[in-house]
Length: 113
Length: 113
Image (cartoon, rainbow over all chains, first blue to last red; front, side, top):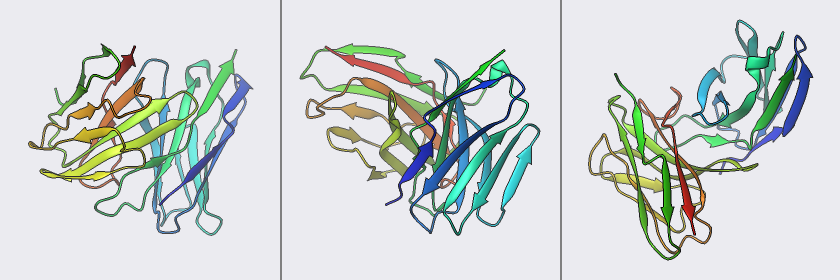
């Protein structure tokens, strides 16, 4: 089955800096890669996703890149703000009927002002 | 107002007792999922269901059971066979399959004493 590795487990940056979180996956059939943000005490929320027919996707200050050959994908947050502080999870799935998302272990991002 | 509701928010049980966690959605989603969240472990898949009266085991199904008698409901029973049941449990749903992302419930924190 699918296995998703996520690094780093913790990340501390200064406000205004960029943050990068990386994930690798094992199943070459995976073609859907979402990222979730979980603030303290709240439910995970989808912030961006990418499918395997796209190499990069951007939404304001966040972007995701995908390298299918190397089986890794990354989340990039530019101009970080204190409200970006949260736990971020990557996930992967083949997207086929009868499958479910497999998540990485999460990255705790702390943005200090 | 559509959404996914988990109840109760906090649950305490004595060791050796079975307990059922509720998950209800009014989003007309076909698929529903149960994950367990432990510190530093990410979200681990327990069970999932794509259609009524059908469900599949996830990576950590031992000691858990589910039913899917109605499209809107996917209750999870934590049995006495689960060795370490104290955790935060998240329910999620998606339109059909996984490529549209999940909507998560707010979670149930189960403490077994």
